[in-house]
Length: 116
Length: 216
Image 1 (cartoon, chains in turn yellow, red):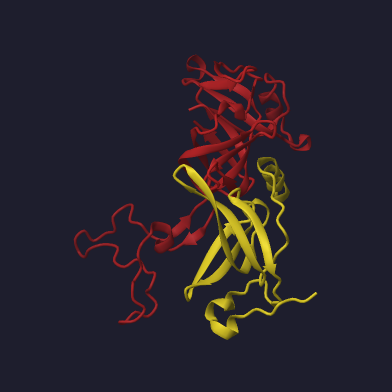
Image 2 (tube, rainbow over the protein chains, first blue to last red):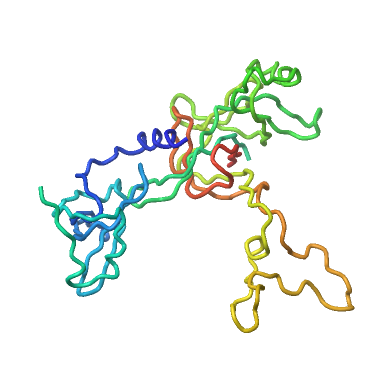
């Protein structure tokens, strides 16, 4: 049954090709916003804390600290409003969903960087 | 009230022109075959009967073969009646009225994108449920103040020696779901004619693979 949905989804939208990223990585999402008639591009930079779902419904959540307040945003991976995604840092984490970052501030809120 | 029979495939998301993600249900609708036309003289009412999905030839009864003899098609898995008021898209791409005859095929092209449709199907069975889930009772708000195990109890079901009985229709616990439900005014987001798929905004009652009737 799932394959049937996937087949229909394929015909609805061309799935976007974004760089690979997973939780722990720091990425910048450039997305279009509409202000009345005008359209401009804004970006949101933060740590990926989860990727969820599959196919057309797949989403990812990124978290950043803005003036000491944690801000999270959920984006659908295949949203047409996403212009591009830049991967800034590759993080090394042991969980697929790093919700423990919500409780951490300051020094403990750092994510180890992957070296290659 | 013309309609079509479909099969729920499942839910997904749909992006509109503004890039908004809309929850949607995908339904494999049609092609349905007109198997019988009911008229006032003979049946007392006017309707057309549609059939959907070929049935396994090994599982047939003779009466089923006889039923589709006039339509000259294979016996079908499910049949449903609709009022006779059909349109279809002709070769030029415009919709036109048409009177179906036995053996005709009705497809998803009877609907247009942006139109609002009603969907009727059998909801998911929930089993024996209490009043909180079944009828939306509030339950007891507090866990303390003398409450022991009464948090989801219905409370009083009536008065005392007058009327000395419980009124008919008192809402109580019992079997929930598995009944016919109609959801009205679901927007048609997209029609994929070559795949026989219709995509509706929002949820549709029933589990995946359930048969649904879509009417306009």
